[in-house]
Length: 131
Image 1 (cartoon, rainbow, N blue to C red):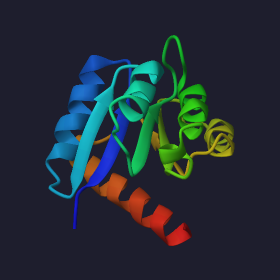
Image 2 (image 1 turned 135 degrees about the vertical axis):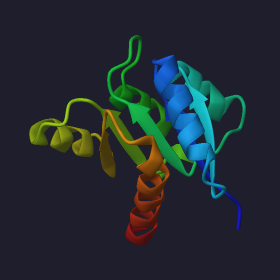
Image 3 (image 1 turned 90 degrees about the horizontal axis):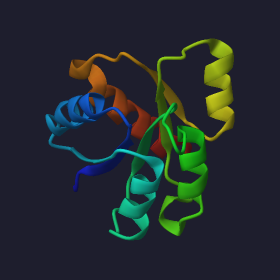
Image 4 (image 1 turned 30 degrees about the horizontal axis):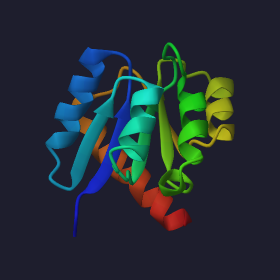
């Protein structure tokens, strides 16, 4: 079985590196990072990266997470790709809004790097069960 491909998009370099390191510890996950919505779109459209899960920071300059998800959904390879948002805004109404925007899950920042791979695997499993 091949590794699940994760596209993580966050404008914060430190958090991107932390997520990349945390997910790379799991041999069943392959992570690709992007520092912005346009970079994520380019990774998929121009570089051919076909993610199994989109992990998107909510608050980013230039193009926020929900807008990025909307643009990625226009690409055939991402039309049905499950997406999760990562945010420090964890109020129930904010999480509900993100789910309405198309998220199958919302991960609250700060997250525990040691349990992140397990959370990602759980999101992938729930998405597969729902498909």
